[in-house]
Image 1 (cartoon, one colour):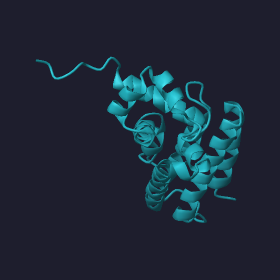
Image 2: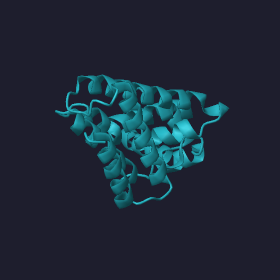
Image 3: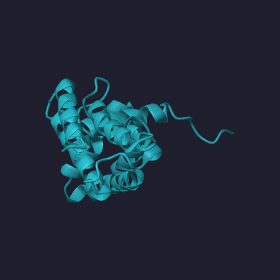
Length: 195
């Protein structure tokens, strides 16, 4: 006798839908009703497949990092420090203001707008951000083509600060073209050896 009824939904598609809702609304701005409606499942099915809201968010965050946010890890493999910096800052524009993605950044929204009931989501988002900045610092320590005035740790923090600002501006409605221009100005200031 079979061991139970098969799921009537595709877990990967449902997780993508949950990611979209969390990305648009942030963790606290997302209700279980919105999640179940977007995912096309009821609460018992959601709990059985993904756990509670915090566990679902953790899975959606991993999906975000391996999917739309993967540009950041890929940028670290660029041949030069200059290329790493350019790919990260331009990638932030594409991620947060692209036509195919919700405006803003899932991690930035989660870090900015979480109260006591969202401690786990906040902790996860902060951990992701710290790990990303540490990886960038290590990569910049290997770069030989960046202006000598840049300390790798400070430069890594600066790049993350610029990327965060881009995400906030995208969420506030600034256009991709405007953000691209802002990114280019920031890159000029960072990468110009004469500055």
